[in-house]
Image (tube, rainbow, N blue to C red; front, side):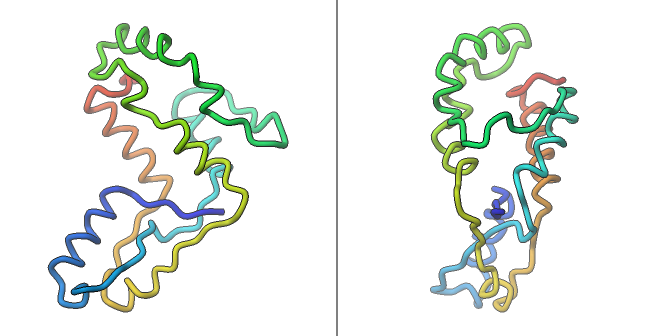
Length: 146
């Protein structure tokens, strides 16, 4: 179980902290504010993209950095076929960063109490945020329209 942070929510909090007297000279945590497990989202991702979902096939973590080492030419073909704005997959994905998120062995939560007590009450649904970003990437011609 982890928490994640929507980039727009992060921006909202930064603006709030810079403009609200309660944020002056303070450090705040930021997270979407919901309970989140990647295993809850995988079936939704598969359904969204029209893919079958089988679940994890191994009891151990399989690093994306290793699995995606040959993804460059494949993405270039996809980008060419769909006329996408970015054909270099390394400009779109950081496999090592995804590995650190997906392979985390401990539960990780960010305490939002200080932010809430100071008046920042905004939050996001992590699944809704994920799919809104997928749509934004499609609208920006970064991902195929589907």
